[in-house]
Length: 203
Image (cartoon, rainbow, N blue to C red; front, side, top):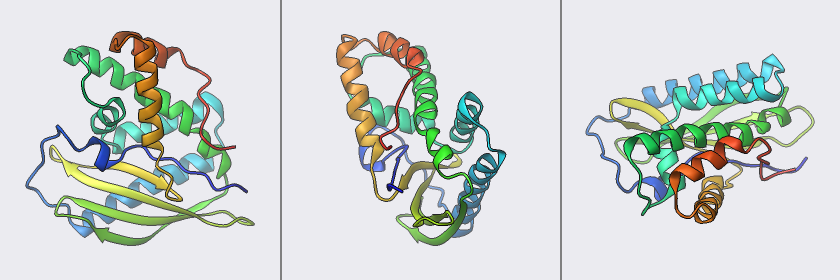
């Protein structure tokens, strides 16, 4: 079995331009959030859902627990002119695109069990949570959740498997699409909404 990975956001890419918060994220809160995310992923795996149903579940998890504004801006990068409404439409399209693309991961880990192994504080507002996805007959996946608190909410801003930084790949892809769209975020949104055959970066 090939090792596979995806990342849904990277703080080093997306941090600029986001206001911080003085509220600390406690170890207990980080643990609770990580376990909630893993529980919902585990539940999705256990349903045996396929295709659009599976991708819808993944999108629901992203929107419920992920900092989708932070993630979307991180992929888009700087220097893009857009109204608030245009950015929101792009963000919605991007999250759906990522859900179709990386929701395919669920199909490859049906039967896996997920567990938290270690919580590491990165700052007052950030935690790294190291977990494992264990699948009988295969080597376990090292799964890392990066969590933060922003705008009064505890959310993940990064999910990493086997250390593979997929947001950087997505940012490159999104910028290429934006260039092809003449730096027009409306046209980029149309492309993301129409792309039903997004392939995840693993086989």
